[in-house]
Amino acid sequence: MFVNKTYLQLSIEKEDKEFIKNKAEELGYKSASAFLVESAKNHFRLNLDMSVYKNLAREINYIGKNINSLIRRINTDGIYSDSDIDFLKKNQKIIINLINKEYDRLLNLKKNFTSESLNLNDKENLVRALQKNQIEVPKKLLLEEIYEQIKDDFIYIIQAIEKSPEQDKEIEEYTWGYLYGETVFSLDNEKLIEFANEVFIYTQKLKMKLAKLDNVFDDSDWFSLKEILDKYEIY
Image 1: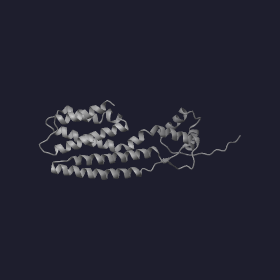
Image 2: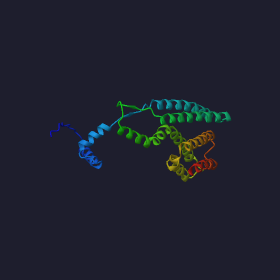
Image 3: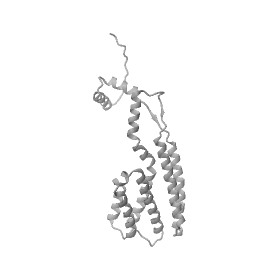
């Protein structure tokens, strides 16, 4: 029986050709052509509108500027009040609420597909993709600001330790190790936010203290920091 066939010429690298052939065999296809046709039929594209997260970054940066203005004033005057601490706590809470709001938004992704409808294979692939990424992606995208805040606070603390004549090199190395160790990245969302809050407030108090030229990072500062670090290392 005559079967009507045509030819499609492709220009690809030798390594890509071998990869396609091996992948087709691995998945049980009789030929590379059958594998490519099936792959094309089941292919779909998922487009996500990420503009909302750019707006989130702008909001957070605006609040951050207000916080920085307060810190500069405190550094200039050399004093701070309870209302200043309340201001820092209040604005940090606003930032955390904004991030949590966008976290919920991402969990209810709005999807825009290039195809008009999805076949069964498409739907199964989509489900697997969301199941695989629904935990990892939100944390990476939406908690990025928190990780960045923690990193910035740690860097300030480490610089203070480095400049202090009262602290050994081991203290500095321990703090660097904690920042890039497993503890911070293994915390669940709730504990990570709590940790960021405590480190943030600690850092602001340290900045206020060190604004006086005769103050250095002393043992009491280290013990206070170590208490926070030890508290979250058990999780």
